[in-house]
Image 1 (cartoon, rainbow over the protein chains, first blue to last red):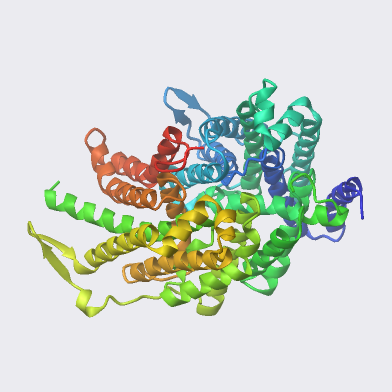
Image 2: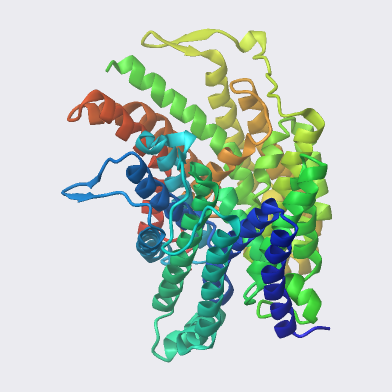
Length: 327
Length: 286
């Protein structure tokens, strides 16, 4: 049985070595795949704060992923068409600068998470799952019928946005940027879990009544976790849209919310590196099985069933021999 | 806006609501009795053939679902999400992704004239009648028969009725197959209006969840009222919201805003109901 710490170090090392190897052997597509993995992992790391520590099964996290994507899409669209973005009395110029786009994506998704969390946290259990799903569907259908930004067809961006000091068009540099964002999010998760806030949040998941009895508000703790979680997933959405230079309503789809949960469960719920391992396995399966058969989702379904039915704690749980925090 | 159009749209809304009820009744029954969230319910709807759906339901229950009763909601959602992947991709593998079309039986085709001179397709009217009959049948089954008594007792206290000598796992298989059969019935009936194709279950499934959450999970009466509400909101919203916005906006923008809001209307309704009553209209108070 391995230590969780060893596994974490190995995974991170893999993410550093793989692109270097791809660069040396001149395989830019592998770098793009690795970037995709990193961004899915980033979105799932965000969800893992709400799901893993706070126990909030949100089937609507695609909302934040999509909002981040559309924040990037809309700003870049106005920049490339040289039209100002008019928000009532406010007129904003579009931008192609990543730091500004990220800030917008984070703020917009955090605000959305605050409103959605405030309303959804009145409910618990299945009702919470369903109300987050309903919010996801609201955004999905709204984006489909909002033809100003492409509606069902989505929105294409011609050139990837820029980051000061880097050439983001070179795959390895963009990968580095995304990987840095992932490391930052992992660091936040790690610090958060050991902080007083993280510990009380953990307690609120396990026993809300006792947390309330010592004078803390479980709902307030969970709301804060939900907002942080939404903001990180929103950032992932902005980067993901930049990777594909394309945003569409699929970023809001409920299947995406489901897949984010799947990533976490494959890796291990509530584990620091759970979402990262899950994303790596997911993209590898998609790539390898997708090359063999069009119907690779069947095998993903079978693997998922096996994990849910027979293994507690996902891959990390199986490797360390400890079922993890959720049993 | 003529009265006839309004009545026609209300009938369409009712018909849609009743189809949703058939889906939602199975789902709410399964959730209420067995405490199981079944995301794969839509896949059973896709199976469209009644006997096949009931059989598939029973097999799925025995092979997979049985292991999930004691599991957390998260695990149930995931396992049934996995089943969706397997079912839809499997169907696509076997039948291809080309849609199939079912014919309306000849004795049910053509329009019928309702009192007041309204022309309405006979088949849709038949759907409303069948749905109402099924609703009545379900009410009769749960309230008046021995099986219904056992089902309701199972909702309240499964250990107790097991102790009283009822074979609880057989009861669960029956309930699951019954729910699957209802979903299959809805699929088969709708198949003659729309086409039958892979993935047809998913949009309806989400609406069916909206229905049972609005009605209160586990309540058949709630599912019925929720289904009619959702059916009417969806259908009437699609027609009347754009018209409504035309009253004070220019036509293009009105259609835009109206249809955007109409597609969200159902979810807004659900959000409002849950904020007002966090366990749905007829859900048990926690």
